[in-house]
Image 1 (cartoon, helix red, strand yellow):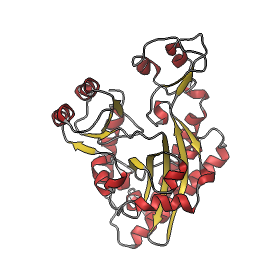
Image 2 (cartoon, rainbow, N blue to C red):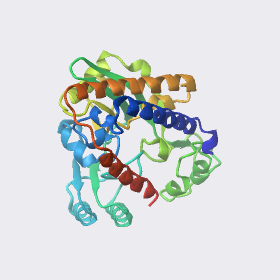
Image 3 (cartoon, helix red, strand yellow):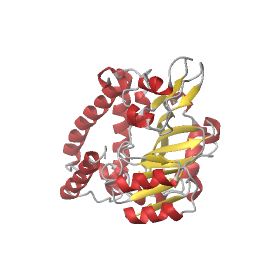
Length: 331
């Protein structure tokens, strides 16, 4: 039940607290679209309606898996039927939210089924990054004055352990994560008896809304980590407040700059460490406050350089498109 899940209540805390900050800052800046100044290289700073097809071209190819943008279902189907990429592949909507409609496809039939059923018309297709650990790093930059990391977590995929009695489907049904789409994932596996101690990863999508858990690595934030991230971010212009979702062999390799980017999220990025069950609600609330303090400092820097804010009408149009994404999330 989501009502007993700490992550559910922390998500409410983040969004309720953020709404208060939004209106207070809107009054301060005398603009409803003040947030857009944080990332001049992305429409709406990535706070609303961010298109992955806008972001990926800004990223250094050395840090990316093979990636293609397809602007229609037909083009995407043609691509997967004759592509040079190797399976498994990841297909995601060009405009996404909280991992909605992200799918790992292991063969052509899965990819065709996904694309034929999807209500969306623009897609990003990538080779699956086969590295063992997934991390999220929240990065901010205030010109050349200050660069830092405010949140660092590892994402753990949902898994079950055999007890020598229960079948795989029974173990999935008993998994405690409230957002794990159990009926969906049971279709992928035969209902076999699991040996005692046998480990089975249910899926490898690092999203809380699909059953992943987040584990704080705040104690690992240091100059080495910052230098590793800067090996990528120093090559990127126009993105100064973002969360990098990445894969690497280890924390040490990540600190050496040896990692691959799954995607980069803009202004709507959350400090994901607050969802660690060991982080108290008081600590989470304080960190949310600091999150917005850093965000506004980045905004102030770009406004001082003459950044033009969006009109209210432009912001409203983006909101309508985001509402459509959410409406289609289960399709």
